[in-house]
Structures are given as structure tokens and as C-alpha cells.
Length: 160
Length: 160
DNA sequence: AAAAATAAGTCAGTTTTGTTGACAGAATTT
DNA sequence: AAATTCTGTCAACAAAACTGACTTATTTTT
Image (cartoon, rainbow over all chains, first blue to last red; front, side):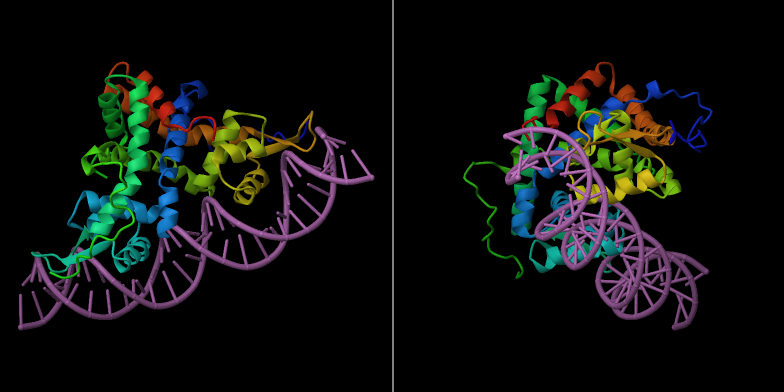
């Protein structure tokens, strides 16, 4: 009978009249499981390279937007410069990414994948792409457009 | 002219004839951004509690499935017992989760959120739920069913 | 031209969240 | 009685994030 503390929480009754049942636990959970399994796809390949998921994200975005600067990448990943530095250095030292001094602003470092970097990005994306294709096929016609719009709408408005 | 290594990568030409253009970089990226912003929603609340995202996941699932065992939770989160232990202990010590010896198998510990735990789970889910509702509304009628099916299909088949 | 601001890199230390491996106690199953 | 299972814990380690401070090179502003 003991052990049930009285309700003194700072979270209860925020005055919005929001009820437990109004909360969309279902899609919250579906997103968690979908993303959990989606991100585990490339793990086998990453282990072979000795890289982790942080390296994956860097190679992916540099491959997708060749010539992006370090600042661009920081803004995309929403991590700190020091966090990025370690991972980026390893990718440069291993020959997957190379840097070119900005032609207009020489303080900038434009980032490019090498051919190995492109191959790695493709290899990592391949199982994820297959998972998406299978899921869309099972979901039915028109799913692709709806899913694209939904995911885009889930993103913060550009004014972050 | 130098610095372009020859193509000796283990990732090139896997014999499937898969072309770069067949890879769905677009949805891969939309998923990344959607999840990045979705998971950042509860950060302000977590900081107040002194908890992290790992605590969030534990409170969420215990709240959603009251009476689940430690083994159930490990299977859901796909982390190790030792990783869970630290986070779970903190939640128990802080009074957000409590354990009850299994009525049939007394080795088991059934997990329940306290009232504070329920309030925390709701508070954390609330901004995420609102984001989902807004995104679905913008996407159009019928989006909810399509998105649900897609996300469910993205998950590994139960035979993990 | 000098001063201020910006882009990138680095040094040092810390935190969160995950990992392995080994072992122990209690309870259940064989 | 022996083996297995569920949970918890100790210890060490690793990945990936963080803060804060500082440097260098370059560009922009005054």
C-alpha cells in the first residue's frame, strides 16, 4: 500500500486541459521503432570500416552536398565543432573526405567525398534504401508522396 | 591533380548492378531531419529533471506497458542489461518508476510508473504529439493511416 | 590601416550512453 | 540435485556528445 507518492510533480496539470488520451503515443512509438531498425541497417558495414554512426552521417551529407563547408555541416548535424572535429579528422586521414580551401573565402574549407567516400556512402545507404522501398511498396500506391510530405512537415521550420 | 586515390575500395561494384540513382537518398535524409527535430522536442523538460534521452525512453515504455519486465524492456530498447541498469536505477531512486516482484515468476521484476512517472511521460510526449498532429494536418486527410502503415513496415519483422 | 568579426582548428576535461566480461543470489525448470 | 533463467552488480572501456578557452588565418568593418 506504501510507495505511491502523492502527486507533487511539477508536470501535472499544466493548465492546458490536455488529457492523457489526447497524446499520440502510437505514432511516437512507431517512429521510435522505425528509426531504431532503420539506423541499425548499416552497422555491419560500419563495423568493417571501423567507423560509427557519427562517421556515417558526415560521409552521407558531404556526399549529398559536395563542397559544403564545415559550418554548413555543423548546422546540418546540430553538434558542436569539437564533436565534429574528431570524426571528420578520421575520415580525412583515412582518405574518405578531402578538403579544399574556399575559392572566394579562403577561411572556409569545402568538403568533398573521395571516390572511396562516395562508395562508402552508397554502400551505407543501400540497405536503408531497400528497407524504405519495401516499406513503401507494402504501404500501397501514393504512399511515397504522403510519407515525403509528412516527414518534411515534421522538420523544424527553417527559422531554427 | 593529386589526392584522388585510385578506386580500390571494398565497397565499389558489389555485382548487383545497383546504380547510385537507384538509392533513395531523399527519404533517408527526410527521416534523419524528422527524427532529429522530433527527438529534440523534450530536451528542455529533460534538462529540468536532470535526465537524458535514455531515461525518456525507459519512462515512455514502462508507462505505455505497465507491468513489463526488465527483460521485456531490454528487448524493446535493444541495449544491454548494464546500460539499462544505470538509467533504471536512477529512475527508481528518484521515484518515477517502481518495481513489483512477479506474481507468478518471483524472479521477475514488473515495472510500473509512479504518478510522477506518468506525469513525466505525458509531459515529454506532449510536444512530440503536437508536432505529429501539426505535420499530419498539413499533410492532408488520410495521411495518418498511410504514415502509420509505412512506419510499421519500416520495422524489422518480429523474427529479430 | 587598424580593429573587429568570422571560419576553422585545437587542447583539455567532462558527461551520457552505450559496450564486454565476470560473477552472485534467488527462483524456476529439468 | 543439477541446470537454467532473471535480475543485479562490479569493473573496465569506448563512442559520441558536451563546455570552455585559445590560436591562426582571413575577411569585414570602422
